[in-house]
Every structure is written in C-alpha cells, then in structure tokens.
Length: 369
Ligand code: PHE
Image 1 (spheres, rainbow, N blue to C red):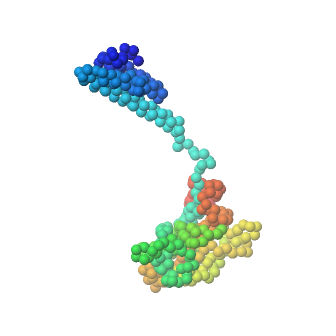
Image 2: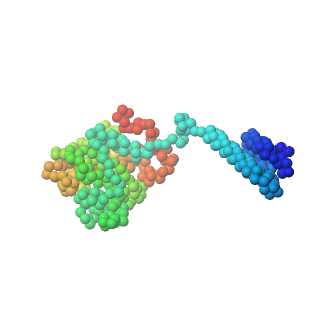
Image 3: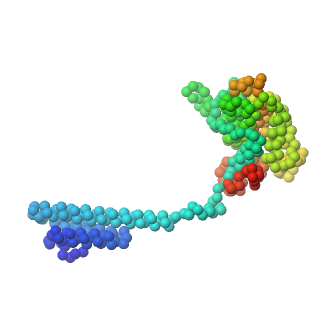
C-alpha cells in the first residue's frame, strides 16, 4: 500500500492514487483468498479505507465537504470491484465444475444401467401385433370407470351377486351419489366402443384392471387383453378360429389343441372358458402337447342385452367377445412363476426378465426375438 497515504496527509490526489492501487490489486488477485486479503486491507476494520473514513470526523466542515464524497466513492468503488471479482471467481469455479462433470450423452450407457422393457409391456405389444394382423383395431378406456360401464351395461343386474364376484375397489360416492370404481375387467371398453362406433366393430383393448385379491397367482392390479367383434353375421366358429390363430401365434406352436368349457359371464351367452392342451410334467408347463389342460381365457357371444344397452339393435347385430389375463399368459410364455414379482420393481428381476428396447416385436422380425 502507498505509504504516503494516511489520515494526516490525505488529499484528493492521494485518494485517486489509492483507488488505482486498490483496483489494480483487486483485478490482479488470483483467487478468493488473495481477494479477501485485499478486502481486509482496504475495507476491514483496520483497513486503509476504513481508517480514512474515520478521519472525516477530525476535518473542518469545508474539508469534509470535499473529502466526504471522495472517500464514500472510494469505498463504494472498491467494494464493487471486489464484488465483481468475487462473482467472476464463482462463475469460473462453476464453469470448471461443469466441465469436470460433463457427461457425454452420445456415449452408450454402461450395460448395467440400461433400462429394459417390462415383460407385461412386451407381451401386450405381442398381442396387439397378432390381433392387429387379424384386422383388430386398438381401443382405450380409463382405469377409473362408472358402475354403468363396468357392470350395468354389461348385463350385471343391480344387487346381483355377480357384482361381488369381482371384489371391486369402489370410490366414495360423488355428489350425485354414484360410486366410481377401479375397473374390474377391460370389458367396459366394449361398452365405450359400441356407444361411439357403428358396426362392424373389430377391436381389442388392453390395460390395467383391479380386484381385491393377492397371492402367488393374483395381484390387486393386473392386466387384461379384451376383444370384441360386432357385425351382422358372426358366429362362435369365428370366435374359435380367431382364438386358435392367436394361441398358435402367441405360443409359437404349429398345432394347438383347445377346448371350450361352458361357463357363465353376464355379458355373453353362450359363454365359455377356453383351455389349451399342455404338459405339466417336470415342473414346467409346455403348451401344445401333453395330457393336461390349462384355462387361459373367457369368451362367448355378446349377450343381446349388452348390445341393446349400448344402443344397437340385437336383432340386427351380434358378435363375440373374449378376455384374457395378460400377466398369466406372460408368465406361461416367459417362465415367470410368481405374479407378485412382476410389480415389486426389483431391478434384478427386471434385468433378468426384461426385454431390450431395441428388440420390440414387429412384423419384420416376428413375435419373439
Ligand atoms: N371380463 C371377463 C373377466 O374379466 C372376461 C371376458 C371377456 C369373458 C369377454 C367373456 C368375454 O372375467
């Protein structure tokens, strides 16, 4: 610091010299520590600028009027120069940190961190592809449904025990007293589609469904794929042909034997469950051979009441519907025994059973890849 500058010899010229000296040292400071040293020397309690400010009290009023503004300006300039320099250091530090931590997003991710397609997503792709090739369109509906779409329109009578079969999750009633629910099956999408489209209808829908149920073969949230065909001349034989074609394509077997067992669903008449021939010896289920049968889906001819409830004339239109559990069929195809593992979000399971996002089923590469 300029030794000539002190409280007794202060003059306008000296203030300017001091200012130049301090600013030069601030600008020349190499890092935060050096800058802080200059700040203490200038503006600290014992600092030169602070010392000069204190001399104002001993000055004559005339002197003070000249020197007061000069010293104030000096103090402000020095403080500002320090702040600017400090900000520059902070910015440079951030730049350096960003440069050091930069990630090249164009590099392939390390194998261990790559995501995978969940088997359920994969299997729904496969199903959509198979039915898509057979001319089915894909429809959608919400998980939260009205009682009408999930039950009433599908010919479940009010208070009928068939409604209890489904172990429904209901919401609290709304202002109008109506209870919404988590759909117990994908069949409400049949209703939505019939209400908005004119026949011929040939659609599938897929998605989450919910029932109060939890064990190795049931999870409270599960998935279904549903099909609906409405036309003027459809028969149970068409239904059978489509389902057999589906099973062959899905399980990738040339021959498959199926059987239809009479069953009851309120929304189909006649109704059936379809079993496929399988072999359970050796702790594994093999589709297409063996002496056993495995139930894989429910189906039937759409009940005339359903067609009527959806605003269509059952004298003119009829058709078939089917619904299958995606989770079960995924487990059968890819050997995943416990349904609860599907949704435990355990990365080890996902890595083992997941599919590469680059190998989605497609018309070119086939169903399984
Ligand atoms: N909705 C039925 C169920 O979840 C399955 C089904 C769909 C049966 C369509 C027949 C026709 O159990």
